[in-house]
Length: 588
Image (cartoon, rainbow, N blue to C red; front, side, top):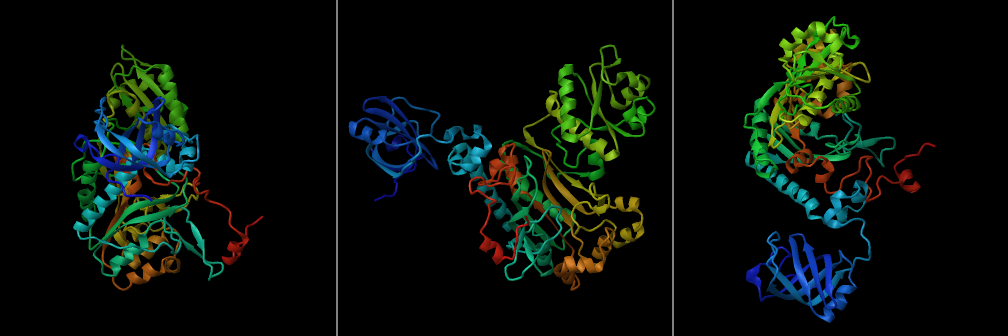
């Protein structure tokens, strides 16, 4: 019969010497040093304890146990002769009087060594995630996540926010990604959708008379994976405030999130609040990105005017952006690798030039720039030892390529990357509309429920003029931390007339709005308060706090890059009866 432990494997200290104790856990290691002498390491959630086997009877038991079996050990605590100062329990050991196997590991060979699981192939780790999570280095990220979520909940509650859960089965809504659809058994041919975000529900809560709402919300999007984005599902701190301005939301999140980074983050330095506000257009011009890593001190500069007419084909009639660094000593092979990496990441080519010790431009495209050297020196503040990397093309493509160049140079050339901090800023004044890369049509840039700056008058003044529509900004904002978008939000469009007009600009009429968003449209006709909100990403924030490069390291049971759950073998086929129940036929 299993008896409760008296102590955990991380608890025993020298003052427990002489006590009879019972500990339980996983057999992490066995080291035999003689016929009847062996050292065991027992591990549980709290730590490890050394167990010393000194009798023939105990050795017979130990020899038949595979590593990672769960054990109950009862014995006496004594002081160790050879202490381990790096281990919390390193001053003691337990001499067993009884060893009982509680759960036998039936595998002589493990898929990977538990304490080195982070070095194993990722798909193997995910298939055996329950073993991977036994590694204390892996487990600590999940523990930190729990602590962060609890801290956020406490801070939001203290600020008067109510935690309210919203439906998981709902209607399809345009949130910028593909939906996960769920067939409705009782309604043939109709589908529920898993929410990409609780956007409509939280706005409806504001119309219902709730003042401040939040939840740690699961969101579902059928997106491709990235290092900072998991496919399938993710969690966000969803929040909304009635009768609130943009500044109300930003200051609230600064009060909640800055202490989280201070108390739980890997780095000691955190940007002071209020965080810097950078308009979207300025961010694209200066950093080539709407999520700039402000730990890098380099900036993008526009040299279009300076290089026009230089005779280099790609520059002619194009926007040209440049990033310059001083004291550049890297070799040509290093430069070639930089250009290749830029092209792989952006699909666009970059070019370069250096200034030698005599103040002459050399290498790369220098022969084309001789005639504009003085203008470039003045614009970029060049000096002997300077290196310039350039991108050309349509404005947005040149900006984005230069942004990648800035990041690569900043992180690869010494002296330009102050890594050990959390550099935070708000990107504000996002465009209301953009031209869709695939459709070639006018589309919403961010959230379609955002209030356009200037309201209905701005929309009416720009109607029919694409350039004027593209110039309208929205009351939208993103929190950026170390180059990662960590929250996104907006002042909401709470006026049904302005909402209809905003959707008309992208080709959707009032009847379309009523059909797509019936609850929200109707609710707004009953008197909606101005409201605003945001949604910081929990997974991404924890990834930043841990200093991990992959978001999968902070998710308990993540999918792999191909949106597969290798541990549960999902997605998988289902029976014909299951398909028949929901009126689905698989096309040949």
